[in-house]
Length: 348
Image 1 (cartoon, rainbow, N blue to C red):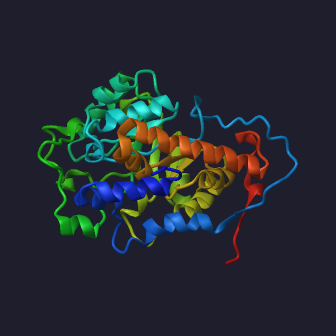
Image 2: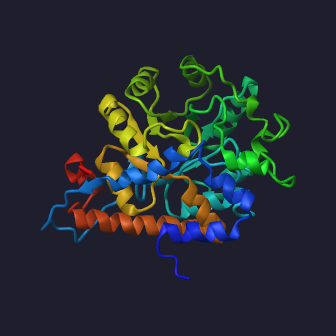
């Protein structure tokens, strides 16, 4: 079967992954309305394409905090990649390097930070952190990541407790015995997520800044109030995210939250998003509404499930080609020409 678009990979992953793994990756919280709305909301945005613009030479490169990437799509932090492919996060890292983009490695990786770093030397990698009750564990992870050459620290801030994902409850989800949370071995037992620290506050940003020289990017912001607080606490980037609709069901779709956050931030820090990106035209809509870059979560796992590193490269290549084509058809020859003038919200 020809793999033409991201939904082809989704169908493959659903068919061939073990049910418990598929359900874990696909899960949203409660009724999954936020998960589904993340995707549907892009369809309410219409382009206002410009014609007769010279699009014979296209430049789709952009920069993340000063580092150039080949196009504005990176890989969001997701856990347990070995559930999708035996080599796990090592394959993810290699695919990101091959496509010259950013990979955010998760605290809940099934490979060590050392393995992830060694799999793709010289590539742009950020490390995603959950702050645990045992602060020494979190401190050690941050310092390990910095020493290994990770270039950014992404604090996920929307998970004081894990959202209720019904299929995981029904399936009694836990990692298979041969898989380990490699970066936390000895620190805690798998899936006792109560070891996450629910007392984390904005003051902990100062604590993190005291541990590392890395730029701090905060992930999970959905409102102008929290965007303002993030800027005030000296973070360098914001990822607008609702955790793929896996935390609080009934919040805003990501693309809608993006508009509010971008307006509040006024260019003071870079703003990115994850959630609901399924086509290159979705990327263009996100950039038109002020995102510097988008990150993909579930689609990266579908790519791994299909053919490991090669499958994920295919996913990224499809998004890259679709993004380039959408840009050209909308009349933009470079990323710098993309702006709010390019889109309108549908009246429907």
